[in-house]
Image 1 (spheres, rainbow, N blue to C red):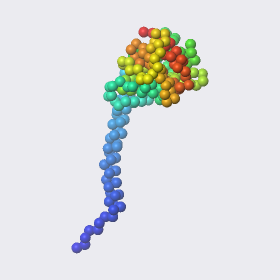
Image 2: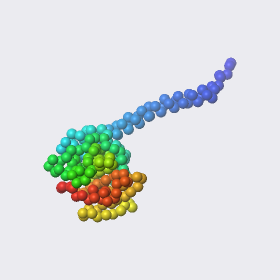
Image 3: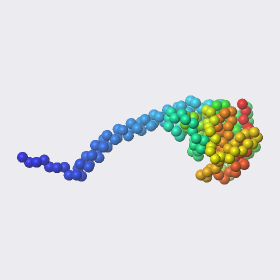
Image 4: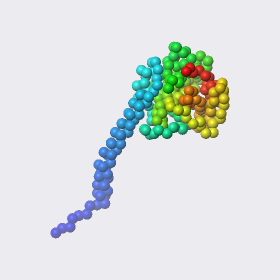
Length: 223
């Protein structure tokens, strides 16, 4: 009786790879489906929670399509202030919000009743775009402003309680507003609070601290 021939080592390796591929493919597919489901859930949650006014209500869906997830879904601890400031570097995904006709110094978009300013009547910064993000269980809305030289800054307001102040930031009080300024990695950011909410301006580090402080302390808000 003939002894069975042994399989060559190369054949065994090929069989092992094929078996591994057959078991891994469904797992990978399931992971992609789960990731898409979670991403869609975050988009729906952010759009639902955004406190928008006027014409921005109609733009909520457009913003929701491009919502970026910064922290895992369901993560409830407060995000770090520097992570919140970094949202501005992601870029606009929707057009600039319109002027609030009832309050010409404001834009027709707000977060929890905190509106975004319209600086262009007193400074060269004009609104140019916007985006929404979810971070640490919070909703963050960022409006972008450009100056005549093409320098762009992002102005972010977060819903919920104010974040902690960033460590190592310089403290300045101007017009009764406490502002914290910090620089690093080619950016400058100013942090302050309006009606108990965190407001952040992030810009290239070519923008002087004085300009950042002046914008943060402009007191252009209405209750």
